Image (cartoon, rainbow, N blue to C red; front, side, top):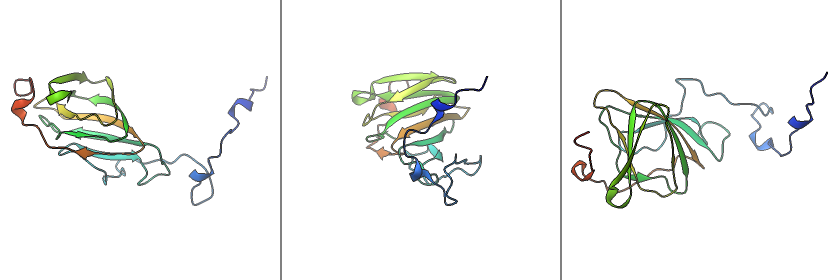
Length: 160
């Protein structure tokens, strides 16, 4: 019996993603060839695998964020962007709320959604091991750094 391929018919126009060759095809960013020219928040090093900077993507930023041991970002938000994160390795904390009195902790395998315009601080809870996140945003990697909060004002940060 032949498979029914009718459900795989293109229903929209994807011609805007046409490559210089004229073909509409997946675009691969090879490991080590990610784009490092992306906004950051202090020492949170972000590289993009899929972004407007080096793929035909126009509504998506997808990248890897690394935080060195003991590192915490400066206070920031991501503008209009909805942000999804996945803890690939390590232990993380995100401070948020009025005066950053609240936080959520995450570990390898956890997912997080950060709403648009929400000021927050991303932290690596480990003093010895790096933290690696996979992160996606719409429409792109918007980073708005804000006035920072001293370590002493972050509940449970110094005693972690």
